Image (tube, rainbow, N blue to C red; front, side):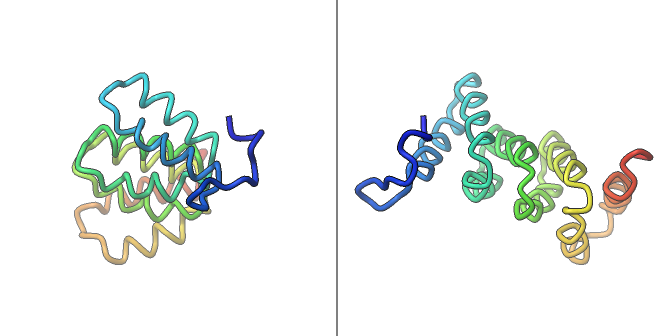
Length: 143
């Protein structure tokens, strides 16, 4: 889809990757679960090009959009998106917090800087979650 036009820009000066990401982000917000899954798979394939857009989607009012964004970011494993996944540990929905934690655990030590920076400002009740994720990140075979 994108490989054959790499390097070409559209009329607004956007790369084909950026144009594709914008279209896929619209599909990610669809009420159609199959369309969302396919969009998420393409966004994951695009990798860090899509991460910035997915990070914005983590604050969407719709739970299913936040879920898809967290799931995609967990699979992309882009180092910069660790900060956004740490913020998602405070999402009101358990499933989204779970996906964020899974994504951080998969990054292992790459997520530590973001975790420590955020935990200095997080409320105390999330202490058990902090301990679990830190243990999984530092000692993955023990978690």
